[in-house]
Each structure stands twice: as C-alpha cells, then as structure tokens.
Image 1 (cartoon, one colour):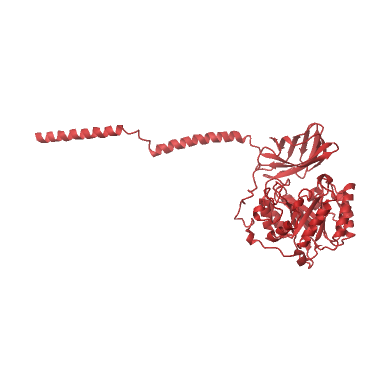
Image 2 (cartoon, rainbow, N blue to C red):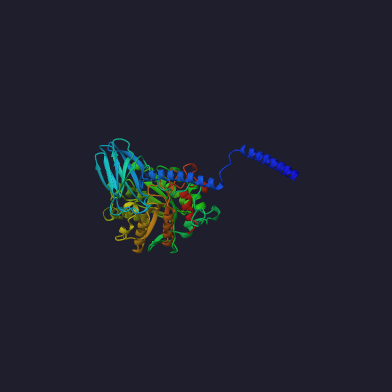
Length: 514
C-alpha cells in the first residue's frame, strides 16, 4: 500500500510538471486571435461605419449635383458691321426622373451686345444679361430629355457663353464655362469599341454587309416622286441611302472619287449630298460652283445619285433679295449643266430658320427657284426645305406646292428630335406629303453631344416603314460626334471600319439592312 501511495505520488508530481510545462509553453505564444465570429462582427462594424460615412458624404454631395445642364457650341464667328457676330447653339438637358414643364436660361454677355438672330425661345437682352425662356412648343422637357435653342450675338470682341443660370421648374442651377460644368449621362460609346455588340441592330462585321449594285443609276434610272414615295424608272419604290459632305468650302478634300467609291462599295451608299453653304460669311463664293461640279462628276462616274444642296443655314431666310439673286444664278447654271443627267437632284434651301415661315418666305422663294430649274430640267427631283430647320413638315402638308417631282426636307438629330418630330413626319405623310430626310444624325442637334441609339432605332423603323430616302451628316474628320470619320483619320478615301466614328459605324451598318 505504501509503495502504491509512493507510486501515485510520483505520478502526480510528473503530471504537475507536465501541466506546468504545457502552461509555460502556452504563455509564451502570442495572444490568440479572437474567434472567426468575432472577427467577422468587428469587420462588419468597421465597414458599416465606413459605409455610413460614405453615405453621409454622398448625401451631402447629392444636394449639389445638378438635375440639368446647358451645353453650348459656338458654330462660327465673323465680322458684322464693325462687331464680331457669334453663332451659339445650346441644348438644355433635364436629368430629372420627371418632366420639367418650364425652363429659363440667363447668360452673361458683354455690355453693348446686340442680338442679331434667335430661334427656339423667347429672348430678352437687357444690359449684360441675355434671358432665354421656353416657347409653347418646347416648354416641356421630358425626363432625361433635352431641348435646343440658338442665337447670333454681335459683340465688341470674342464671345463665349459663360456664367449661366439655368432654371428648371423651381430649381436654379449655375453652369460655368463653355459646355457647362455638369456632365450629362453619357449615351455615347468609345470610338474604338461599340457597346451593345450583341444587339441585332448594331454594327455587323464588314463581311456581312450586302453590297450595293455596281451601277445604281444604270439599274434604276431617273427617279421620280409618286404619291409619298420616290420610285425608279420602273415605278418601283426606291430608297436613296446617302452621305452628306460637310461644307465643301471647309472640307473640300473629301470631294473625291476614291472617297465616294469606298462609301459605295464598302457601305452600300448610293447617293452623295454636296453641301455648299450659301452664305458668303460661311465660305460661299462662285468658285465653290467648281467644287460642286467635281462632286457631280465623281458621283456620275460611279453610277451614284447626287444632291446639289444650296445650304441655307446662318443666312436663315432664303427669300431675301441677296439670297434669291445668288440662288437663281446658281440653279440656272447647275440645271443647264445637268439637264440631261438622270442622277442629279436639287435641294434648294437646306434649313430655313430664325422665324422664317412657309407661307411668307419659303413657299414664295421655292416657286421662283423651281421655275428657274424647270426652264432647263423639267423632271429632276427638287427637295424643298421646311420651316424651323426643316422640321415643320406638318405645317407644309396643309399647303404644299403644286408641281411634279417635288419632295420636302425633314431633318432630324436623334438625341434631340424624338416622338414629337416623328409624329409630325407621320402626320405629313398621312396627309400625302412626300418627305426626304436629306440630313440626319444620331447625336443631338449641336452635332457634338451624346448618341441616342434608342431614338435612332425608332427613326430607322420610320425610314423603313415609309420607304424614306436619307443622307447622314457628315463626311469629314471634324472633332464632333456627327462626323463619320475619326479626328485621327487622315485618309480622304478607301475608308474602313477602323476609320469610322461610333456614329459612322452604326449608321453605315444600317444601310446594309434595307
């Protein structure tokens, strides 16, 4: 028994030593981490704290994020009666999720300024403040939508619109600097990569493009207007799918046979529109007639149709004495030169604007110029501009001109012109008025804003439904959204997909689908 006690005592001593040893080892370790559950709780608490702080900061910032903006584009300036005339185009954006029923813009201008022309708004110039308010037809800006206005201001020096106050309903927003300080939701895509690549309406691979006829004019002959449609010499509906040059005084290098040929062979283009600005302040001289004739020559050699465009714009009213005099001389020369050509169409006033009306201005002018053309060419199609930058086709439908092969211009820029203008087009067509979309783009009306593919798709549905002919703006590499060529493209012909802007790729891909 004693031996057993001694043995047990020995075992206890050994056990105590072992436990002490183990405890000593444990105490020499770094402090054990908290359990996984505790770590997760602490992490979530920290993240929650950060999120709350970020949310608080975002909430603070949200009160300063504008619900709208004004984007300006200075489209040109020139000397006028000892002052500098500047044309400004503006777009008012509504970023709200609800419609805005009224808007007003206040612009700081130099003292002594004079308002020469204005459009799409009510303008009041007092001292150094130009106030623009909505008119009846553009007072409401849809949620996420926009409206445009413009003016020509005479100043004693260079002018850029700055320090603007925008009122959208009851909210006032300060916009500083050319183009505004609030970024609009970007509807545009990078020039090198198109979004929505899986959309059946987006760009197709070049190999899938259906090429046009080798010689469209030889196949379809002289075109005419029948009802609301353009038809070929067989009487079948025929759509012109065209590209408009930019002003040939500024971008004459693109009026060449190689440029037209690549558009025809690679992108199904069957028509070229030669845009010659009619205003001497925008580059017009009689020397420009030669460049127009070069363009007609190249298009004719390629079997393409061609529009000779008298590009009324800054000179807003075609019915002034000077404009009528120049137009008569120009169209007399052109109609005499091309009276026997089956591929030439005449556009006699691109975009009448600045309060120019159908009954008082455009219609009387058109009668005079049509008479000049018909003295030489009795059956070519003549395209007639309509009020408000060739948009008020519904007004013209109430009192069209009499005569054969007359058709009326409708222009749209998809990000600006949406259901309202599409409804005008349908109203006019349903009234029996033939329409020709002689200029369009899928960006906004300034030519420099974002692309609106949703609106563009609706426009192309209309184009296909009513067999409308069209010409997209514009063949050049100007650094603006509406250009077909990238600013980095230095080529003047043999264009490939890699040379095209987002707009260029999208629009030209549509030409292969109908």
